[in-house]
Every structure is written in structure tokens, then in C-alpha cells.
Image (cartoon, rainbow, N blue to C red; front, top):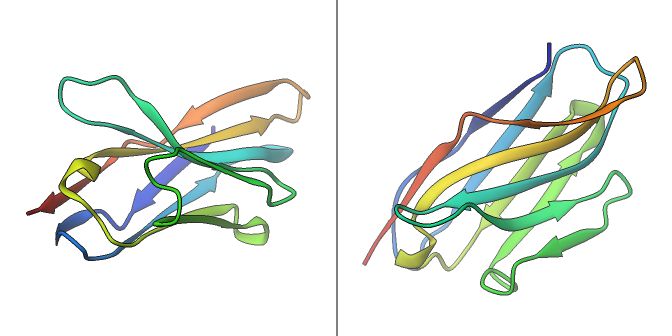
Amino acid sequence: QVQLVESGGGLVQAGGSLTLSCAASGSFFSINAMGWYRQAPGKQRELVATITSGLSTNYADSVKGRFTISRDNAKNTVYLQMNSLKPEDTAVYYCNAHIITYLRDSRDFWGQGTQVTVSS
């Protein structure tokens, strides 16, 4: 079974920084894209950033220039460095991984979510 375990959320003042981590564990063949999504109260879950196994990245316009996604393929871990945080960044942040199983099928897995709260 595959698990994604997130860490690094918390409470920070506007203008501050946080780094989220998400480690994938379990039995699988490989990981393709990994990413971060977020969901604020009363809103739909939205993409924050993604990164491919070849390290190509994609960002939501709202976080470009402030957030940086990276990954360590050897550790099956993805990171999200968040700088210049704003109150509107407050949300539950979810890690996602597109995983190839040993049966060579592909599935999306999600972490449990970590709360990020930015105070004004």
C-alpha cells in the first residue's frame, strides 16, 4: 500500500515562510508527477504546483514567484517552499503523487492534508 505523509504546516504571519514536505512510502514501481494542492474553507481544491520526475515544474499564477516546488527522487519526497505568505494562502495543503504500480497501472494518491494558516 502506498502512503503519502506530509509535514511542515503551521501558523505564520503574513510575509513569513514555511516549507512543506511529503514523503511517499510503500511498494510501487515509480513515481511520475508529484504536486501540491490546497483547499480553503468553502472553496474547491485547487492546484498549487506540480513537478515531474524530470523536474519540470508548473505553478498556479497566484503563487508564481513566491512558492518553489522541488523533489528528491532518491527519497521519494516532494517539497514546497512558501515565501511571502499572504492570508489568502490559508488552506489545507494536500500532497499528490501519480504512481506507477508493479502491475504497471497508474494511480493518484493523496496525503492526509496539512493546515497552513497565515495571519494578517
